[in-house]
Amino acid sequence: MPDVVIPDKPAFKAGEVCELAQIQPYVLRSWESEFPDLGLSKTPGGPRIYRRADVERVLRIRELVFTEGLTLSGVRRRFEAEQPPAPDDLFTLAAELQAAEAANARPVTGRGAPAREVAAPVVASAPEPVVSEEARLKLAKVKQDMRSLLDLLGPPGATPPPAPARRSRRA
Image 1 (spheres, rainbow, N blue to C red):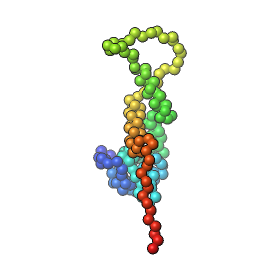
Image 2 (image 1 turned 45 degrees about the vertical axis):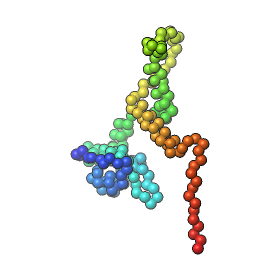
Image 3 (image 1 turned 120 degrees about the vertical axis):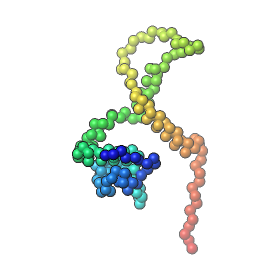
Image 4 (image 1 turned 90 degrees about the horizontal axis):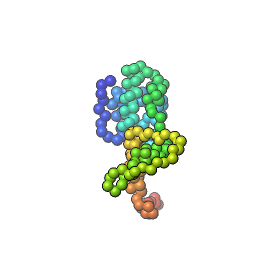
């Protein structure tokens, strides 16, 4: 499949995804049933929305089905094999990052020369976890998203704005 240029926008409608991937809407719907995490859930009365990552995934599914001849269950198995194991949760990832940073930190004296290290007793422990750059970037993105949410909520203790008054329909 020739390289498809995905427009630079955050969300796409189903028709746009079908046009980009050159597939029929019923094909996209069948793929949604096989891959439930494909696209965002439909809002009541609204269209199904797809993120850029969803569009990229649809294009990958199309390539695997039409070019390599895989079935949808074969595509699912391929995705599972390509997916690296995720950390249990965000707290585990944060602990791994802190441990890696602590292992890389060295005590420094006032002039910038390394301080003399005192021999510590040898304690048998598990090796320090190695944290990939990808994990660091994911955590930084989550941290940025959390700060954005906190900014939207306002300072702690602030009262939320009052809800708009409702009009009655009495004649």
